[in-house]
Structures are given as structure tokens and as C-alpha cells.
Image (tube, rainbow, N blue to C red; front, side, top):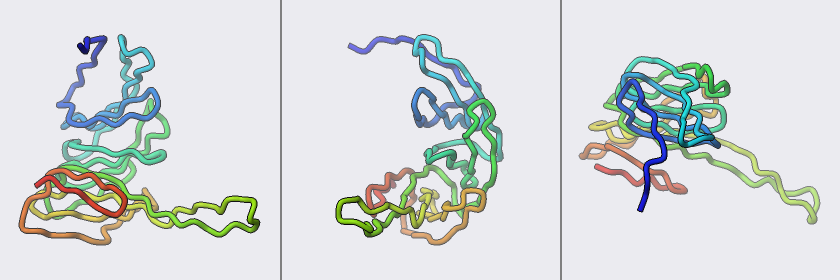
Length: 173
């Protein structure tokens, strides 16, 4: 049976978690983004936080950035310094941003030699936002400090959560 080895009470309403190494990133409702060190699970340590407009409902990590659904849109936070995460840009969406996931598009470049593998190059990075009654919003985040809405899918149902697997978005409605 599972046993409780430790915990951390956030100041907000912890809604979603994302882990990178020994760090846990928490979408903490009206308290924004929290960063907690978990190298000793019996004694988690709060490292930093970031405040922004809206409520942190969901998050996904990619490189040095966290992308958060905030109810009013997408918030991009630079997490390169876990002691001081920095909100760098936000993008309002037309609906009620509930959840996010990320899709990275790559190409395999040919190798100059048959003995060497080809280079993989990122050609696009997109955050997909489950935007409530407005369906799915597709945001180009290849340049994270300048997110750009590039597409949408507006079905007759509410998009409440999603998971992107390869080129498919599975949506909870």
C-alpha cells in the first residue's frame, strides 16, 4: 500500500503538476506558478513562484519555459532560474483556457556521411490550448517571448482537457 512520505501545502489551489528532474512545477490557481524542490521527498522546499493575470489551471514544460493555461489565455514563464521564474508573455484566447499540451515538429536532415546519423532539427513548436466553449487554440511558441495564435478548431462541444500524441489531440469534452 502507498504511504505518505511528505507534502507541501501551496498558498493557492494546486491544480496540475509537471516535473523536471528534482523540481516540481505547480499550477497553483490564483497563486500562479510555484516551484518546489523534491530531492528530499520527506521535506519539499519552496524555491520560487511567479504571479500573473488569471488562474494557473494547467501547465506543460519545454526547455527553459513553462506554458500555463490561465482561464483567460496562455502565460509563458521563463523557468531557467527556479528561484525566480519570470513571466515573459501572455496571449489571450477567445474562450476559457483550461488545459495545455505541446507539440514539437522536427525534421531529420540527411547525413553528410553514411556512417553518421543525420541531424534532427526543430521546425516548429506549438502549444495546444483546450479553450472551453471555443474548442482548441493552436499557438506557435517557437519564439516563446512572442507566442502567436496560428489556428483553431471550434467544435460544438467544450474542450476541457487534452493530450497531444504525435499529430493527434485527444480532447476531454
